[in-house]
Image: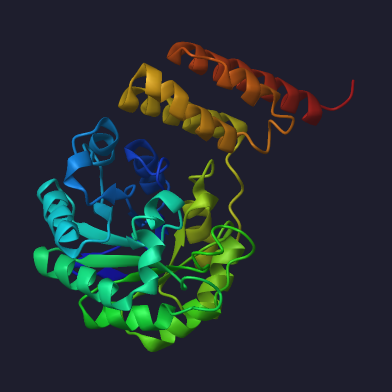
Length: 332
């Protein structure tokens, strides 16, 4: 699959998620099979670019692969400036956010709120595409609410004004993340335009990825929440698409290595105070199937020291490994 001059390794993408797809997580997902990883959403407001949060989101040091940076805003001129700023900072693809349903974004008429205003959508796309020499992509939802699914109209505007690929989340803004994603609109969008279309929403398994690709005719899939705590899902999906066979989940030893590495990288990236806090949600996602009573999560979330977090993970996995060994050992 191509986006502008770039040939992706495969058609599996990591969705941009605020507070999740930071550099440590992007690097891990890329290594575990994602063909493209997209950064967290960056505001087009230059007044916040020097904040610690924005500086962290702009950090691409040591990243392999194509650097795709998502920007959000409602003013065409500011969006153009943000695109230029991020290209100067190393972005190789600029992705425009018109899919975020969060109230704090929508109240500024950014994110998916823009889908109500096709003229503004067109003005923003034109401004950004004309401002930079790198490919510009777009992320949308199927519409503002179920009564106003105008995704096909927005898709045509995008193609006509130079967007290089379009990712579509199969929900409207009003649906937030509730209910099930629908793929009929994505299918209609794919039939209406010729640029690559990426299907997004509720893709949490290799079988679902194959099903969505088959039904929509989409060129690729974008994984968001399905990758939280399971960054290896990209490798599993790729294997399934190629062979029709399922790769098993990582064994405990590999899960420990991945989680330990991820937590340590988060701590190093953000520093001991913020890193400790941010690591907690990732640990909860990774261990959801093991820590079913959430007792370890409760204990882990009370730890305020980086080294103690790593020690706690080590002890927890040693106990898991011992329990697993006892369960598979033959009775004496």
